[in-house]
Image: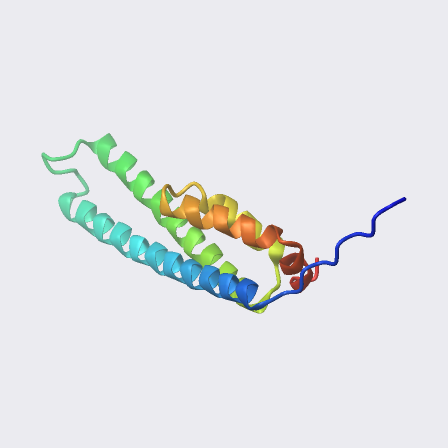
Length: 139
């Protein structure tokens, strides 16, 4: 004798509240990513200020040191910008209840930002794995 499957839980106020909180936290992380981008730009300006007008590094830096520092700053800027854009898009998608795959991808990337990003990413996976939330996203 087979047992009937239990009815799926309906999307409720708790799920709505969790999605709203996730959205807010992703907006906050996007703003922090934009702030990090400004900090990288400030560091870049300081590096450029240390390089003499003739293009030679001051006594504080050797020539190859400046090149490495510029590459690191550019990479940091690109990663900060990409992260901020992804987190902003995820915040919007969570509030609109669409793009579950993008939200999961961003949660995985956010997990790399220990410890707060890890907590947010794991919480995102937990909320998005609920059957009623999956149904609300159309999955």
